[in-house]
Amino acid sequence: SGRGTEVEIKRVNKTALVKNRAPAPIQISAEQLLREAKDRKIELEHHVPRQQITDTEELVEYRMRRRKEYEDQIRMQRHHLGNYIKYASWEEQQHEFERARSVYERGVDVDYRNVSIWLKYSEMEMRNKFVNHARNVYDRAVQLLPRVDQFWFKYSYMEEMLGNAKLARQIYERWMKWEPDDNAFGAYIKFEMRQNDATAARAIFERYIDVHPTLRGDLQYA
Image (cartoon, rainbow, N blue to C red; front, top):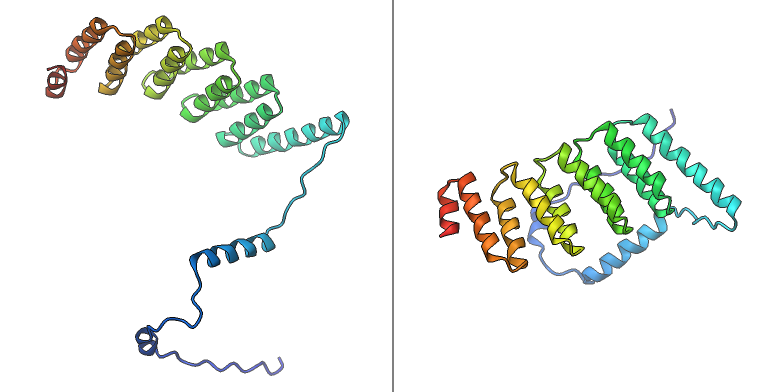
């Protein structure tokens, strides 16, 4: 090979570096650093132009292309539930709610024990005010995974927010049959207090002590 370029490497005196604590001639503020970093990022980033869809035919073509991409991702990683959630969320954005439900159902079939997919599914229904569909999702979730408190909390809270105290109470009663922990009983007691029913709240306290005869329970009741 030809003669390469000679590079002179100078050793840095570390002691000198450490001792030199004088301020730099030009002080750079944190704001400047952030601004420069942002500017550099803008320069380096490759921006994908936003697609402008001008007619129905283009919209149909765009949706077909996107669906094929999502289906390909699922085919490559069938057990990766994040792909189903992204796909269903995209269908929701298109207001294709039946398609979104179909995708969520496919995800649930892959792994019904995954808490996230049930929560995303129910949140979609609530967000779009499909109350009966949300009930259906929560009801299936609590039957399949009764030990996941989050489902019971959200299910009962949804009914309470809709003004359905009777239905919320029924959900709490179903939950209590599983003899859940302190937090669950506490939530039920607070619910009855919000309904201005101190007698019912006291009765739940008594049941809690029967189920969890611990010092903590006695102290709470006292």
